[in-house]
Each structure stands twice: as structure tokens, then as C-alpha cells.
Amino acid sequence: MTPSILRVISGVQAPDVEGGNLLPHPEVSLWMTETTGVMGLGGPIEGSHVGNFTYVPTVPDETGKNNVWQVSSTQMRLGNITLFRNSSEVTLIDSGASCLGLRTEIFELFKDALQENGHERPSLFVTMGGVEFEIGFWDFIINRGVCVGSTPKTQLGDPFFRSVVALFNVDKSGVPKIGFAPRNRTAIPDAAVKASDSKVGSKVAIPVKRVLKDESEVEVSITSSKGTRYFAQISVGTPPQQFSVLIDTGSTCTAIYSLSPFMSQTAVLLMIIGGAFGILILSFAVTFFFLRRRWLKTHREFQAVPTEADDDVAEMEAPL
Image 1 (spheres, one colour):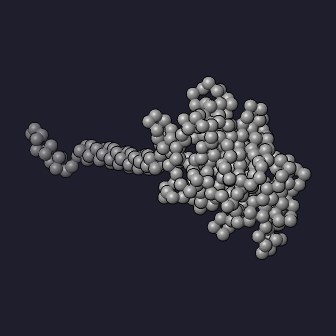
Image 2 (cartoon, rainbow, N blue to C red; image 1 turned 180 degrees about the vertical axis):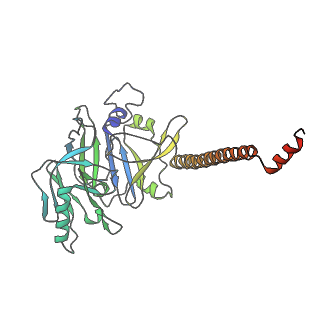
Image 3 (cartoon, rainbow, N blue to C red; image 1 turned 120 degrees about the vertical axis):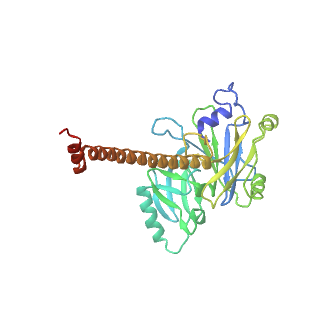
């Protein structure tokens, strides 16, 4: 859900275009756990967070435009050990990243701080908009490993979303902003319950008419595999074709497969097999051509060489 897509479907940008004005409010919220989640179209999910949202404006990317969901964080600490403070660290809010990513210099400080904490299990705290948000220790532990790595730009991936509810907003001010609030760990939205009852995840469609009718947000279920990636089911085209899409707020574009992954892989495999078969046939043809050419050349030379029998026949046929 890029800022540009949210602008269109909420009617903030090009309100007369078909597909606009679908949301009562230009907001999308994300609530996530280790195994499931909910995307609220049109506003926050009721009971999903604790306290009020703190809104932080996005900052421009390398092109000078606000095309990605990134903000400025001013302080970060692991337990009681400060990693940076009084700074303006560009921080990507990226639901498509399985782990937390820290800029290389900060990551080195994080490793030292983690080792210094010994057997303690410290939380990671990040300050945005003047408010400190906690990422619980067990939220960035996946498969018994620390899911924090070194990246060119600091990014708050899925472990952050398991601790904090994010509310992505594009109003008419022109600058997208993100609201943050601690996740209510005791609440489970209805859509998340529905998703947990299904072995293949949610099949919830977005009822557009309902949104326009009662002005309420719509909850779309999100499923997760081992807390590393989060997917929702959407329908595209006429007749509708269903796709499982990655919920990725760190991307600058929205993309779907023109072919299913299986079909794409099958097509590539067939191309490889076909290419190998073609090369094999060509090599046989070239080999046959040269062998036949060599045989013809040898045969002609054999016919051109006179033998003793040929000399005797010539002598017998010669006139006396």
C-alpha cells in the first residue's frame, strides 16, 4: 500500500477517477501478531491499540518526494544502552521486511550492547515524534535467533509491527504521515479470528458498497508464516482473479504476477529443457554434417586411386 495508491482509493488524489473515494477516511492501519494480522481500510481497528496515536510526518526519499513510508527517528536504545540520540535517523517503516534493519554503524553498537546485556532480555526502544515506542525482546527473536541485521538504511520491519500498530495516512495536506500506538496484546480483532480458523488463510474480499454505505472501516485478514511475511487475499480484474499479495509498506510500487509463480517457474523450466533439447539436436546435426562430408571426401579419393587390377584390365583392352 504505497502513498500514491492510498491517495487514489481514498479520493484524496483524482477523486473523479473510477476506483476513487472507496475509503471513508484516507487511512490504512496494520495490526500484526506472530501468526496473523488485520489490515484496517479506512481507519484504526477498534481495540487494537493502547492510548492515542502519535502522528509523524514522512520524510522525502532520494528523489526528493514522499513516495515511501519513512520517517525520522531521534533516539534508539537497547535496554539502558543508548545506540543514538538527538539525531534525525531516516527510518523506513517496512512491513515487507522480516527483520529489523539497522544502519551499519548503529548495528555494530547494537551487537556490543546485546553482548553487554549478557543473559538479560532487553527491549529495543525507538523514539519518533517525541514518543518512545518499545519493541519487545521476543518480538525480534525468530527461530531462536536475533532477527536484526545490518542495512544501508535503518528499517523497522515485522518485529516492530508486532509491538506497535501503525496507521498510514494521506490527507489533503500533501505530506503522508504515520500514526503509531502500542499494540493491545490482549485484543484479537474479529477478522484475525476468522483467518485463524482457515488453513489457507483469509478469503475476505473488500466490500466496497458497504464502505460507501455506512462510512465504517473494513477489516481485511492477514496471514503469516512463522512471523516472517504477511499476506492478504485480493481480487483483481474482470472476472475477479484472486491473488495472495505481500503486505509491503517499504515498496514504492504495487505489483502482481502476470502468471502464477508455479506457472512462471514451469515456463522457465520448459524453456530450459527446450533450449537444451535444441542444442542437442543442433550438435547432432553439425556432427552428422561433418562426418558425412568426411566420408564423401574419403570415398572420392578412394575412387580416384588406380589399383593393379585396373592396370591389368587396361593392358588387356589395349589394341595389339
